[in-house]
Length: 409
Image (tube, rainbow, N blue to C red; front, side, top):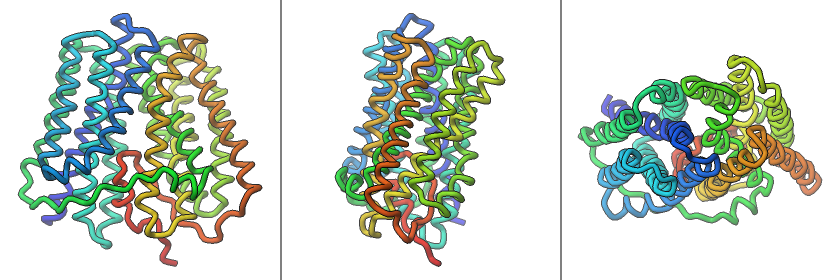
């Protein structure tokens, strides 16, 4: 019971963090456009967030080693709250980009603390249930955050940002009130980007394309939705449809990826994603329901690519390489996510809203070509690891997944 209560505190903090961080991106886009920001400036805000995310992933384990889990969490949560609250003081895009760096540092740092704490508490018997609950909290909170956008968009700007600030501050309470002793601070995860490339160049390409798809849509998608005529209150449903599609695709994709060559699975997912991007041209002049359906299909075809690519890379790794390999894949994802929103916003400004999906389609076509080329280089491994839905949270996630990829049959 005590362990369940401890997990509940961690999950509640994670959920509150997701609510605040998941709401700020779309709110920035809607508010920024309403105050005269250009699409390029809005896209730069998304890139700034992921730049902060990268800093937070690297810095958090080192800060935990110096001040402990609880103090580190408080520092990161305060950084995020300051960034959120400061939005109402100035509407300059350069300042907002700095504030978004703070929100990125916050989400990466706080999730690193949560995952390190979870890793210290789980056992082989509880790991599966703990990870299942963690994934559930991550997806449900993300969905709720998108639905919140409709309500926030109808409020005064300072009220909307203050509400997100309050939620971010509230994430401090569950961990502050827990009486459980803080675990020992784990050593910082080694960051070896070359390890992922050595294991599977195709997996590296896959996670970069996954970042291109997800980061572009989440950060620049509101611009696309507004260009299609969606009301601010409908933008949240539009983004939630994408998340829901991605969540529902995990089960069938996992079943297929465990039974067939994962390179073929990646290739066919990218083919489907390319067709999904092409179908977005049907959204012009369509009803909001059709636009939502197309967003759902886009999420369904693109969201699982990261996990399939990660599973393919782990097929070529030893047990000792699992943790640094997971961190290396997250490194490439972060690099792709930093670049994607700004590039997508530039293309939208130059060529119109559908340019974002043209960019994403080009990325997936490149992945198809590269996948076919890699199939000629070497054979598929004879024994595959288990497919695992890998949350794209921090460099620490590999430790939390533990031996969940290992087959026991």
